[in-house]
Every structure is written in structure tokens, then in C-alpha cells.
Image (cartoon, rainbow, N blue to C red; front, side, top):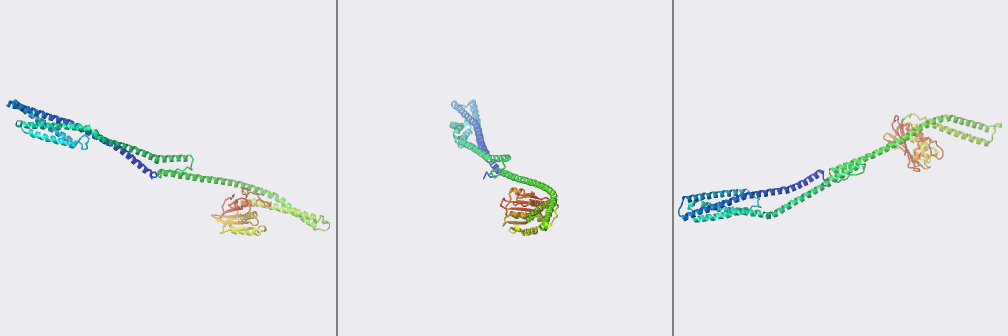
Length: 547
């Protein structure tokens, strides 16, 4: 729970632990200082009481000495039986000295009581309040009795009064002697009395120290676990990503701001990888397009060269072929006259004439065949501007299919037309009819006797699509690469000039369209698809692809 808390909560917890640690140490230290100050104050207080108790003792000694001298003077006067002025003066002087000593004792006693009254109530080390009060009350009682005796003149005091006074002074002396003795005894026994206390507080001090050290250890452990390690993991991950390891995924699992930063770093690397992948795909596509455009440019240059060559060749050999065909016809006419003439006009046998007729017919057929080739070469080289008009492609394809279906060699083969909607495009109907015818004848010639050819017409965006698919012999990759080159053919019967698809390609290019060839391999059929714009496009050149 704490590991997934925000950094603010972790910092507050660390601050609380640090505060508790400082408070514990401060409590232990300040308590020791306060106890030391209390001890110093108590010692100072008791030290100030010692002179006062000594002053009390001295005052009592003076009282006792004064009382003894007064009693000696009275004793001398009693023995002599007369009162001399000298003895009276001495007695008076001793009496005044006794009064002064008594007042001095009362004054010191008052100061001592005031000192005790001002002493701290928590002083239990050097003071026993009950016993001190008991001694002070006894001293006050004795002092009061002494004052009662002292109020009468000395001359009126009887011997018994002096005896009583002497006893009271002795009692006062013994009681004042108890005060310093009691204080000394308390100071001597203070170590034994506070032994349990200072052991307890030493234990408290050690406990506070151990608790503070433990909290410091916990604080350091929490700081290392919750702050240092996530930062180190994040820094190591950033270094790996910076080194090119974009597949590295930073996992902190803390649920705080550092984890959020790590997730943001992961998202950035993921998007960077996606961008790199997209760029690679774009580069591959551009490379493929460059290769295709290069091949198309080369193919166009080849077609242009073939076109110029075809025009020259057709022009140069058309006239000799015409002469050959005319000469063969003339010979055939002469041969006919020779065979059907009479008399001497018949100079050859019937067998020889039949052989000559066959040879002449062969010359005529081959000459006309060459003439047809030259005408097709001229057609190939004369493709010019496209005169277009809106044409229903579906109807055009139906007309071509109907015409091809009547041919004897194609009657046993199936042709299906799929045109679910009317597709009208601006095209040259005659040239596109030739394109469809070439595609159909190639498809029909590649399928067996019970083969099928499917023609599909679709409208896709602003383009018309004509697809001719068959289940015939299929194509190899080599055939697909050279399919639209002039004079390229793979017919085994030796027929065909290899110009049909080349002318188809040039017509599609003039219309600004695209022709593509698809085949999954030999024996798996083929599909040729023509794409034409619905509206005429100026300065548009078509392209071809083999797939």
C-alpha cells in the first residue's frame, strides 16, 4: 500500500519519522538537562542553607554563653550579698547582649524559613519536608518559651527560671544541631536514594537512543526502497533506451509519480517504435514504387522504341509482302489457265499443278499473315490521343462476351459476367472493347475445355474496375514480370505475336488507368484487373503491376 502511494505521501511519512526521531532525542536530551539543572538548583539551595544553619548554631552558642555569664554574675552577687554598681553594669550588659543574640537568632530563623519556603516543591533528594517542619516547629516552641522568660527583668528571675532557661537553650542548641546534620545525612544518602531513578532514566535514554537509531534505519530503508531503487531503475531504463534498446520496458510498480514517468517513457518508446515501423513500411513502399516506376519507365521506353521500330519495319516490309502476295495471285491465275486450257496450252500434269497450287496458297497465306502482323505493328505504333465519351462498361463487356461466345473454339467454355450496378466511364469504347477482347481471348485460351472465366465490373470510389479471372494454367513469376512486353508469349502452339497485352497496356496507359496481373502460381489460375477513371484525366499515364 505504501509502495504505491504518491511521492508526497512518502515524503510526509519520512518527515514524520524524522520528526519523531528528533523529538525522541530532544526529549531525552532536554529531560537530562532539566534534571541536571534541578539538581544544580537543589545543591545550590542546600548549600545556601548551610551558612544559615551555622549562623543559628552560633546564635544559640552566644545565647548560652550570655546566659552562663549572667548566671555567674548573679551567683557572685548572691555570695557577696551586696549589689555593687559594677555588678549591676555587668549584668545589664550581659542582659543586652543576650537580647541582641536572641533577636539575631530570630532574624536568622526567619531567613531560614523564607529560604525553605522558596525552595522548589519537587526537591525530594535533599529535603524531607515533614521532618524539617517538625524540627522547625520544636525550635519555634523553644524560642517562644525563651522569649517568655526573657521578657521579665533579670533581677526578678529566680534560680529556677535560669535553670529552665538553660534547659531551653540546651534544647534549642540540640535542635539547631539537627538541621545541618540532617542535611548532611540527606546529601550522603542521596546517591542510594536516586540509584533506582537514574537507572530508570538511563534505561529511558538508551531506549530513546535505540528507538531513534531504529527509526533512522527504517527511514534509510524506506528511502532506499521507495526512492533510490525506483530512480535507479528509471535511470537504467532511460540509459538502455538511449542506447537503442527500444524494446526495453520500464516497470517500477510503485504507483507514484515515478511510475507515471516510467509509463510515459514506455509510451514514448512504443510510439517511437510504431513510428519507426511506419517509416520502414513507408520506405519499403517507396522503394517498391521506385522499382515499379523504374520498370514502367523502362517498359515505356521499350514500347516507344518498339513502336518506332514497328512503324519502320511495317513500312519497309509491307510493300514487298504486297508484291509477293500479288505475284502469288498472278501465278495462281496463270496456273488455273494452264490447267483448264486446251490443246498445247496445257503443259503440266494435274499432279504437278496440284503441288504448285498448294505452294502458291501457302505463299499467299503466309504473306497475308505477315501483312496482318505489320498492320498490328502499325496499330501498335499509331495509338494517339484518346477520344473519350461516357460509356456503359457493363453493356460494352456484354457485347464482347456475346461476340466471343459465338466463336466455335470457345463455345464449350463458360464465361460469367458479374455487374451488380451500372458503371459509366468516359472512355474510348472501341479501344476498351479491344482491351476486353484481348483479356477474354487470353483467359479462354489458358483454360481447359471445361474451364471457366469470370468477368466482374465494379465501381470503386471514382474508378471503374474490370476484373477477368480464370481457373486455367496460371502464371509464373517470370511470366508476370514480362507479361506486357511486346512479342512476349508462352503459347505452345506457336500462334500469337505477343502484341495483344502490349497493345492493351498502351491503351490503358492512354486512358490514365492501371492494369495488374495476379496469380498464385502455375495451375492455380490468373486474374487481370483493369482500373479506369470514371472521368477523363488530363496528362495522366497509367501503370502496370504484376503480382
